[in-house]
Amino acid sequence: MYTRVVPEQCIACGLCQLKAPELFEYDEEGVAYVKIDNNHGTTPIPAALMAKFKDAYTSCPTGAILRSAHPFTSTATDAPKH
Ligand code: SF4
Image (tube, rainbow, N blue to C red):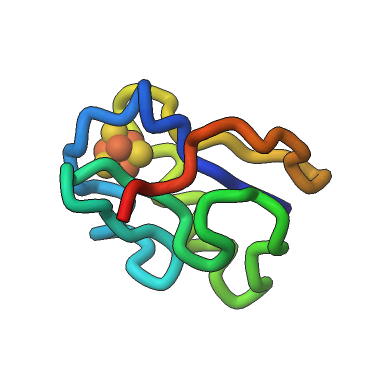
């Protein structure tokens, strides 16, 4: 399973990082991104973190967290701004 955050849909609520701190981090504006692959969605979620991921995924109030059985391929400008 792969995941990425759509920053335009993130309201910086903090839930995903609370549920799965190993997977989610925030940029300086408080917008979440997937830290295991800098929000590219190309690194598989470690099996040991899947329960935490599902918790975060179902907790996101805006549906900003995407998931896919395949790596994401878009190179859109949704990587965090550092
Ligand atoms: S749970 Fe959703 S809205 Fe909240 S910080 Fe994470 S991605 Fe953003």
